[in-house]
Length: 75
Image (cartoon, rainbow, N blue to C red; front, side, top):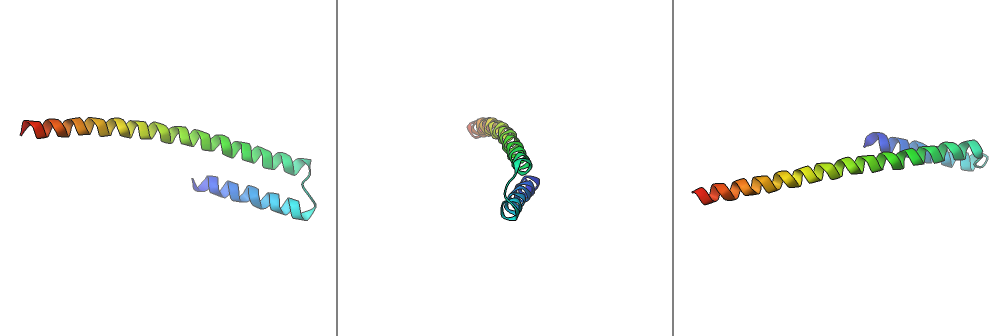
């Protein structure tokens, strides 16, 4: 996550420097656009992984709940 924030900050600083320095040219626009597309795709992949982890944790919670109810019932 820290790398994503670092890349976002660098992209933003680069855009500001290009904007205030001499305007945004084709090369700067290409670099910023590429970086933003990469960050968006990377964030989407990260969210998919988090969704999978949440689903696994919900399954684990359901199994533990069943085991706890079974244990309470056997007492």
